[in-house]
Structures are given as structure tokens and as C-alpha cells.
Image 1: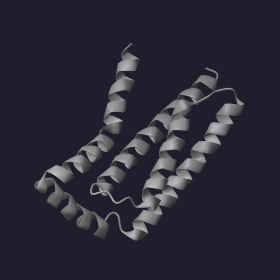
Image 2: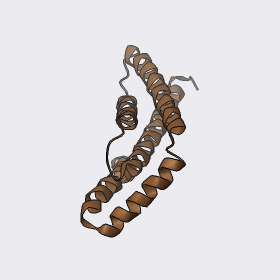
Image 3: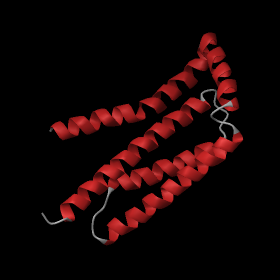
Image 4: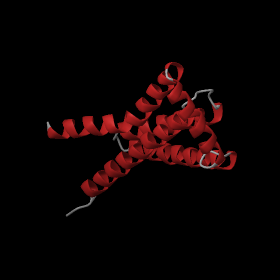
Length: 141
């Protein structure tokens, strides 16, 4: 029971970045202060962390992560073990790549990307944790 509660809270933390980006996007139409803040942050982020060079780097990192996750997924699938966390990591990587390449016209676009990176980082952590658990179970003691 405690395991399910822990997974539930980790899922809430994981998706809180995307939820915050959605709320900011909704408030940008209604509140002028939020709209000004988002325009300021959009200019600031576009000049620093989300310049075109970094966006290409992020795309390659996500593509590499997706390839590694797919390879691990096929390896585990052949052994009869199905890993939902790997499937979710592949899905999150693909959504992240699509979000970067589509360059959506959102006011909170950069916050949405930060939220996606948080989700992907959590998925990588869960994949590594579950992979280590499987490796420890296979080793004879």
C-alpha cells in the first residue's frame, strides 16, 4: 500500500511542471501581469537556454534516450519482462521531440518544455531503478 502512495506522489510531482505550464498558458489570456511575465521570460529563455543550438542538442539527447529506451524495451520484451516505465519513457521522449520541433505558439512554451524535461528525467530515473532491480534479482547470492 505504501508503494502505491509513493508512486502516486511521485507521479503528481512529475507532472506538476506540465500542469503549471498549462495554468500559466490559461492565465496569460486573463491576467496582464502573467502575460508580461511570460513575454519577459520568453525573451530571456530564447536568448539563453532555448537558443537554436541548444534546441538541436536537446533534440539529439531526447532521440538518443528514446533509442536507448527502445533497445532496453526490446531486450526486456524478449526475456518475457514487460516494463511499463520504459514504454512511458519512449513515449515521453517522442512527445518531447515533437514539442521541440513543432515550436508551438504558446506563451508558456518554454515552461512546457521545462515540464517535459522534468517528466523525462523522472522516467529515466524510474527506468534505471527498475533495470537495477531486475539485474539484482538475476544475480545469484
